[in-house]
Image (cartoon, rainbow, N blue to C red; front, side, top):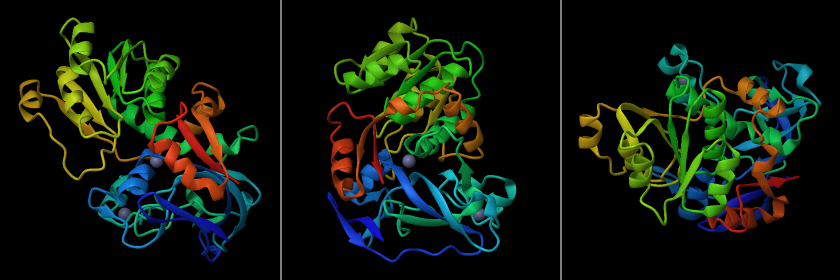
Length: 343
Ligand SMILES: [Zn+2]
Ligand SMILES: [Zn+2]
């Protein structure tokens, strides 16, 4: 089968690899749509996210949908022929974290597209059938692939434990930030402030629940949000950027006793953090690791239209142009929000 393989920074090529066959508990999926994620961009440009480093050529990609063609002997045969959205981090079910229910931080997680495991920018993927969620009939393949990042936004917002009317800041208005703003609004958030470096993303923010948006390149985000809140700060600050600077911004714009939910991936193993600010304000800092039991709600939010997922997918490429998709997203060109690779 064909696959788009990463060889070195900015070098992704179409190659021929062996088609997988499903193990007893797996489904074999003919891949239809793969979303390019900000985390993929770290691997595309730098070959690593912090200490997670690509050591030999790797197929990237983890946000995907497709049609189940075949299942192993222990998997549900009812999945055959169905379009599925796939929760791509497969836990071991055995470790302490899994037994506690915190399977998203499993010590032996299998995650396609994270080294050393090949990802899903290819024609067929075999993956644990329990993590294949049938998409409603009317859901397109591109929207089904977006269920994965939407599930991240759902988990991000549930970790914030928003109370009705609470104010929020969303730092970084890529797809995760936009969907976080929208889900926060649906969860009862009051005024939401947004910040990003690109005006077209600020415009998108205003369509996805952000009430007031600041350009972080032209304005001091901390001063702008503190000013807009009369010096109080926001109840919850969400970091949804691909930046080393935004965790600190989140701490500075949160009110005393407020919360920060850190979902963005800077790509570094360590980032500067204003410990004095956090201590003086007694902030609650909550990191977010992907998702945990969030796919059913994400599917419902997308299929009911409460989150307009289709409009986020601004660009589509064939598999043999996967490199162009990575380039587009990494250079923030042509008004891109989400680029997908479709087959
Ligand atoms: Zn992702
Ligand atoms: Zn585990």
